Length: 159
Image (cartoon, rainbow, N blue to C red; front, side):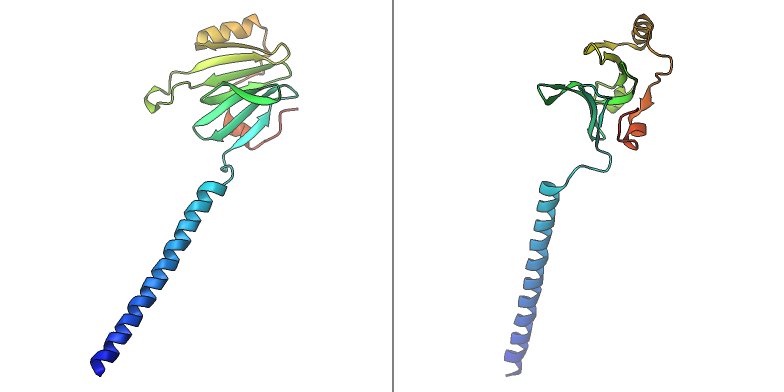
């Protein structure tokens, strides 16, 4: 009789543990599912319109920042990945790009200049070619390449 009672108690404990484990497992599955499906943009993600032009700075992840141009109301990446630094005024956007997604090649930057009024993109340039093109286009001396994180905190275009 005692053996039968002990067996019943043991069996009830096993069932309870199995039930609790099943509930925890289902909860974890739901948490992982909803995190993957319904997670919105990360804290470092943003889109910054560049003046009233058809261009924007778009950061969809830390490794993927690009310059988009709206063509027929659709954003098209024209300089990607990844834009490290930019600056802009009423006419021009200057860009430093790391086109190689390889940590060993972080010093291989390319440079771009975009004329927003004429909707022309110049580049990619090496740094010395970039500096010559800035002189040729008579860019404002106040345009200095700035880290894109400086723009993240100010999500509106410079006015």
